[in-house]
Amino acid sequence: MATDPADIPHGMRRAYRRFERWRSAHGGARLPIPEALWASAAEVAREHGVFHTARALRLDYSKLKRMAEAAGSVGCSAAAPTSFVELVASPAMGQAECLIELEGPRGKIRIQWKGTTGPDLAGLSRALWELA
Image (cartoon, rainbow, N blue to C red; front, side):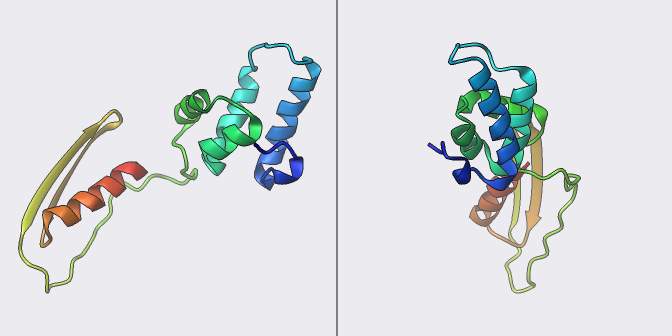
């Protein structure tokens, strides 16, 4: 566990110092962490990842993950989401056709593909779905 401030990534140090000040001000009392601190931790988690943030700030991983997901997508920058990606296959590929529909807690995705095999598309779909 990272307890030395030198072990904390540069972009996480401000939040780390805020948590340390709050903890030292409460002398070990088991009080709920204020929402403002959770919000700053969630922001840091979106940049540095939930696992590393929870470990460095000594927070509950599950709660931090929920907070980060509620505030925005984890592990993604603030850039606008991609709405369309065109993938062009080489003409040497076969003329197989594939349709994959994925449904999850965040919505549905449907991909119709011509010119590749199902397993290739399944792997690509899984990778794209994890980014969404």
